[in-house]
Amino acid sequence: MSQGAGSDVGEHVQMLPRRQFRKCAALASLCLAGTAAAWVARSPAAPAQSTVAPVVLPGQQPRYQYRPIHDPDGTGRFYMGREIARVMGPGGLAWLDRPERESEEHPELVIAVMDLRPGEVVADLGAGSGYFTFRIAPKVAPAGKVFAVDIQDAMLATLRQRAAELGVANVVEVKATETDPRLPAHSLDAVLLVDVYHELAYPFEVMSRVREALKPGGQVFFVEYRKEDPTIRIKVLHKMSVDQLVKEMTAVGLVHVATNESLPLQHIVIFQKP
Image (cartoon, rainbow, N blue to C red):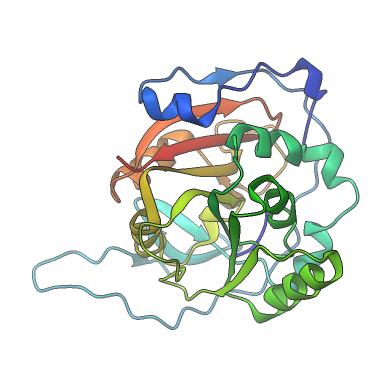
């Protein structure tokens, strides 16, 4: 659970503030065609080893299915027709912190779309090295805070070290499990998942917990490579389509309010807790 390319920011359409999303669930999607850039497929990761047995009640179909023949970059576990991708391990830190990421992904645009305010409480789910965590923290300071959530000790150790080096006091480290992000109930204004959701071993369970952790009107921001575009040179299992996200979030009670297509390779798909 860790991760997160862009045309000139000045060419992007004007962002609508998050509070306008809350007023209108039928907000029209923002669109802007981005210039395609050369992109390399992500580094291979070790297969995810899930230790949690799914609960299946008598007469019910299992929520997850396993298929012995599957994509080599996948876990072999399927959810709502989608194969779950393998998790990027600590060896992916170099990928997360590559120098060119700033110019390729424009993280400042993602933060702008979130329309964060001082005093808000945000979770960076699958925070990894803290690439977005430490960009969010000053936006909500001094009274607000960021829950930096990950399941990997190596990622959390990196986060802890960077928080100390930067002198950031409003980041709270959270060790999650495969099924529970361990976030306080009814406490969050926003949750960010950057190139993370497609790797969750138990997406229904995790996102159900996320919904519980959101305040009414709180929002979830998914940043994922567009599966709809076959020219984007990212392995298929590490992409998500808007339709698939809508189907899976509807299952946990989150409402699709907007899709922002202003990044050239990724979309920002926004959901809200009613």
